[in-house]
Structures are given as structure tokens and as C-alpha cells.
Amino acid sequence: MKLEVTGLTKRYDGHTALDGLDLAVDDARVLALIGPSGGGKSTFLRILGGLETADDGRVSLHGETLPASAAGLLAHRRRNGFLFQQFNLFPHLDALRNLTLPLETVHGLSPVEAKRTAEAALDRFGLLAHARKLPAQLSGGQQQRVGIARAVAAKPRVLFLDEPTSALDPEMTAEVLELIQELAAEGQTIVLSTHEMGFARAVADHVAFLAAGRIEESDTPENLFGHPTSPLCQRFLSRVMRY
Amino acid sequence: MTASFRFRNLVAGGLLLAAFGALCVLIFSRLSGHWEWSKPWAYRELLFKGWWTTILLSLGAFFGSALVGLLLLLGQRSGLPALKWSCRLFLEFVRDTPLLVQLLVGYFVIFAPLLSRTLDGWGWDDKLLIGILLLSLFEGAYLGEILRGGIDSIPRAQWDSARAVGFNRRQVYRHVIFPQAIRRVLPAIAGQFVSLIKDSSLLSVIGVQEFAYQAKVYTAKTYGGLEAYVPLALGYLLLTAPVAFLSHRLERRFRHET
Image (cartoon, rainbow over all chains, first blue to last red; front, side):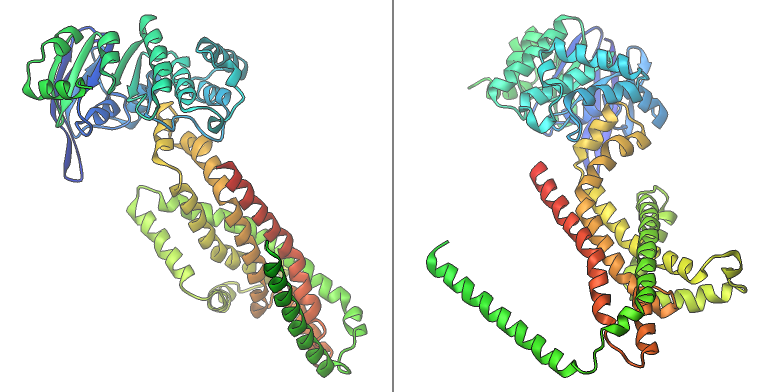
């Protein structure tokens, strides 16, 4: 994945979430965004995922400029996948229907094809036994895994994950991270924000540190975690790695 | 439940029953002699016709108000300020004036002068149609607010998720927001239907020949007979009680689901 971002700015009612963010990543399969909460990770991901538009600046993904029109953004969202911290699934539909509904209505699969694709996706992550359960009957970790299954069932070019394990306990966090690692190993392009530094270091091939709406540092995991150069990043890492 | 609690409950129940019984005895002893139950029986067809009209009227106004409510909801969520504020203004007007006034103004000031000829010639009961229309507008305003509340109660994450899987605006509403919102407001909608049935009795003031109107006709025809008011109350109860029961059932089911 080739990603180029220049001068990206986003304001909400006087609060500046992104403040002229610049980032250039030549070739990364898994890009991890780390940094303090409120630093702009979510906003950046939401813009990359086509859920939000920037006030200023330019994003080019795979050599194509991110569209600004509503129709262009819709097409962009349909090409890519997005997963939030929690409440990804539609609570009135069972796990299987959560997968088949977008496959049928958005991607134009026939009900039979959609069912086959959805079941294959659930099976792949060991979730087929839960196909007929409503989200409320699943654990938080299972819900996130079904959410990921739904996102990858449509074969997204890029999978955006916004702190996918922040709402989970350590055991569930592990089961979700394992799944993401598996996807990465199979070649899925992923951009994720996370507070799991060990995971970012192990799985990402590029890490960007975001604070106060800017990229403070961006490098390979070895360099960024091994020898951070910016004072902000040094302080952040020394704090989160202490325990 | 302790024994003393049960005893106190029994005493309270007994006292209330005795008071209610005494009141009934007092009222009926005053009225006995004037009441003849053979008279309402003789006019049973008239009363039944009114009751039936009330059912048709309520059903018609229910569907009408659903349409009005939906339009007001969509209007309020529209991006066009002119549309949005017109809807809000209409809602405020309807909710801040009495239904009785709306019926009088709506029928005698607006519709009656507009219709130079009645629609009777085509087999249409114009009073009934106008009545259904006015009632639909009134109840629709409330229904619109109920629907709006239901949609506002859907968490932001659901909108985001729906957009993230690639649904367009219409699909977001159809597949994600409406099914969840309707489930939440179904008890309130059923409650609103009860109000609608009761409010329909006011249409007698513009001459719609529904249940309450026929009860008054009965009183006039029998020179002041009051017997019809008892079947009148029971007839409404027969319509509203099942709907109210359904509303409570739905409410309980929803509470279990969440």
C-alpha cells in the first residue's frame, strides 16, 4: 500500500482534531497508528476510510486521490472495510445475516452466493457455530471477530481498524489480535490504530506516532520503538512501556 | 410479603370496593325509574352503526397519521432548512392548539367553503373523509415526534457501522435504523393508537356520524334518554383495551430484549 497525506486538517466546532497532518508511506502492508488518546488517530482513520471528509489537505491511497463527492466516498467505503471499537454488528440481525445483508444489497451477490461466502468467512475464523446467534448472545471478542469477518467477506482492498480491542478484556483482546495477525500474514492490507504496542511492533511493517493532530514520527517498528527520535514519542513510549 | 402487609392490603381493597359500591348504589337509585334498557336495545342498530364508523374512521386515521408522521420525520431530517423549519412549525402549531379547535377551523373555515358541492353524489361521505384527514394530521404530528425520538435513540455507532459496510443513505435507514427504531417505539405507537380512537369521538362536532355522535342522536330521539352513554363507554373500552394490552405486552418484550 502506498499512502501519501499532505496538510490534512479537520476541525470540529473550534477543536482542531487534525492539524496539517503529513505522512508518506511508500510500501506497507500493515500500518499501525499509535499515540495518546485524543491525538487524532480516530479522525485520521475515519477520513482514510471515507466516513468523514477533511476540511483541508489531500490523501492519496494506492496512487489515487481520495474522492470528495458523496458518491465517490460511498464507492470508496464499498471497496474497503472498517471496524470500530465496538457496536459494529447490527443488533437486530443474527451473525450470519450481519454478513449476508451487505453482501446482497451492497455487493450484489445472490442470496445463495452471499450465504456461501458468509459461512465461509465465519468458518475461517471458527465462528460458524455462532452463525444463528444475535450479537447480544456473543461475547465482546466474538462480536469483534464477527465484525472482522463481515469486513473481510467483501474482500476489501484495505481493512481499517479503529482500536479494535480497546473495549475488550485481555483474553478477548488476545483472540482478536490473533485473528488480525492471521489476516496480516495472509496478505491483507491493514491500517489500524491501537494501544497494544507489542502487537504493533510484531505485526506492523510501518508505525506512525500521532499526537495533537500531527504525525510526530513515522518509521519501521524496529526504529520507532527502538530509537524514537522525537521527544514526544520518547516520552509516550517510555510511559506506556513502563508497566 | 408479611402477614401484616397482606392484612393492610386487604383492608385497603375492601374499603375502596365499599366506597365504589356505595357510589354506584347512590347513582343508580337516583336514576332508577328513568332508565329503560329496552330503549337502547331498540336503537341498537343506530349505535352499532356509529361504533362501526368509529372503527373504520380510526383505522383510516391510523394509516393516514402513519403517513403524516413519516413525512414529518423525513422533513425534519431533511438537509433543506426551509423544509425542516416548515415541518417544525407545523408540529408546534398542531401540538399547541386543541384538537377541538383544529376540527372546527379545519372543517367550517377551511374545507366546507372549499367544497362547493358535497361528494355525496359520488358515494363519498365528505364529512368522514375530512374528519379522517384532520385526525390524521393531528395524530400524525404526535406520531412524527414518536418516530423522531426512536430514530434519535439509535446510537451513532450504528449509523457509522451501516455506512462502513457500504450502505447508501436509503439502505442505512431501511436495513439498520428503521428496524431498530420501530422496535423501540412500537409500544408508544400502540399507545398513540389508543389516543386516536378516543380522540375520534370529537369528530361528532363536525357531524361525522361516529359512535359518540350516534349516542347523542339517541339522546335526542328518546327525549333525553341517558342509557346510551353506558354502551358508549363500553364500546370504546372494547376497542381501546386490546390495543392498550398489546402496548404493554410490547413494552415488556422490548425490556427483555435489551
